[in-house]
Amino acid sequence: ARTAALERSFQAAHGRTRRSAEEVAFAGGGALERAAADLRLEAVLDHASGTRMREFMYRVLTTFVTDYRQLPTWIQRFVSFRFAQQTLGSAGVGAASAADTLTAHLLFDWLIQAPHLALQHCTKVAEKVGRIDALCLRYLELLAACELTARLQQQPPTPQQTPSGQTSPMSLSQPLHQPTCSQQIRVMDLDLRRGGSTDSSDEVPLAEGLTFEVEAEAPLLVTGPSESGKSLLGRVLLGLVPPSGLGASVAVGTSSSSRPPPQLLMAVPQAPYLAFGGRLVTQLAYPTVLRWPSRAPFEVRIENIGVASGISEAALLEHFRPLGAVGCRLLPPSAEGGGPSRGPTRRAVVTFRALHEVLRAVARPQDRVIGGVALECELGESGGEVVGSQCLSHSGSQRLGTQPRLARMRLCLRALGLEGLLLDEAEGWFARRPWEELLSAGEQQRLCIARLLYHGPSFALLDDCTSALPVGEELEIHSQLLKSWGITPITLSPRAFAPDFYTRELQLCVQESPQLWKLDDRRAPSSSAADDAVDGGDSPLGAGRVAAFQEDVAMGSARLEEAVAASLDEEEVVEGEE
Image (cartoon, rainbow, N blue to C red):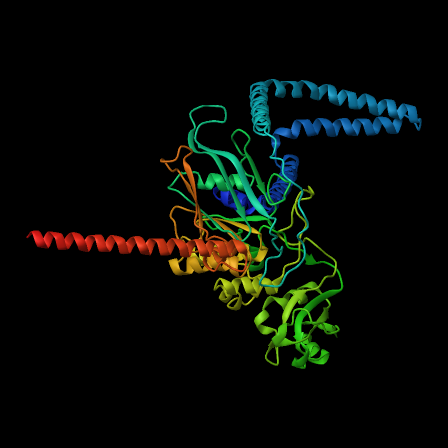
């Protein structure tokens, strides 16, 4: 039963990853999903190894005690052993004589066993030949898979530029990496094709010579019917599929890797994906591996304590003492982060004895209130490492773990209307639930967008990820991504919506266009040009435009008056004739 349960757990994790392969690839969580599957596979292998050892010992004991077919062999060996013992006793104390006698009796015993073993091997020839044939077939399958992988990896990644540092922390309502005006996504001469193999001519062209740019704070809407290449374009932007076409290139920001880092571009797939059996805090941090403190001192940092709030060290220590706190200290006041309404702020550090006490202290932020002041509790900066069920393998190719920013996570949940998930759980951030079964489709999409807000990339690839939400809330989420969080959305949608927000629309599968695509730019002209055209400004060029405009108006009025007079004359002539 234990073996079956472990195998079912591994098969469930493996099958879920296969079914959600595209969503996992979009989120960049391949290493994390592999680590979770490896843990279940190791449990299966360890249990199987222990089971085989127990079966071996059981067979040995049953063979010695109950298998009557082995009695002649054991009687022969017992008699040979007694004979050798008596012979050695009567041969004297000479070491050479005893050794020769023992060797002779061992050779005699092996000589008797050899015919029995040869007969057994002869009866198992057919079975061994079948095993050799199956082994050769497995080797051939492995060689074919290696050759196919080598052919698929022949195309080198697209060369791009070197990234610039974007690691300065921002406020809670801003992305973790502040976008700069120089960041942009540039696609040149890209061909989108569907169906067929790599080297065949039966592919269906979806777009040819696709060229466009997406700058920071300039959202783009990609529309088209089903199977028009929207998801394929998303895979190319994420580096999952190499760009095709003569001279095709895709540059995302200033990244030089084949896949852009999550601080530049992050995707939210159409089908929401939640980590299997993950805690609430890991759902928001996915695919980043969280790092927890693993050695003393175990500390909790309290941010933004107003100087005017009157919270002292004694009050803090009294609040955290039931949770296991052993010390507290207030840091000097700081004017950063307080804001004009809160004034100067100061931070505090509370020390605990063990990790579980720290996690209990930060699990439920709604309980950390002193005198009506909500404390923003974060994990301390003490030494830590990746621990827990979400640890990675020891290959060294995965990203290092990072400590969670719990205050930012709560703000992201609040922005999407999901703060109740945190407040209703007894374990708070560390509640482990089957979220994909408890949450509705709309709530799952909101949680995935909250994950996007937490990571705060410069650009967000939204693959129709708000289809289960009402139209009004959908538009509000798209606009708040840019206005409140500084994230430029690139939305893939089968329909056009929010024309006032998405002033640039890339239409795919346009049959009227020879290249099967069209870029519609409805952005208003720059404010300086509008001022020159309307007000004229103080520049000579603006004054000249105003004078020319006034002259055109005067000429048009004169011509209108002449046309009206001629029309009246014609009417008088007609009336006189009648």
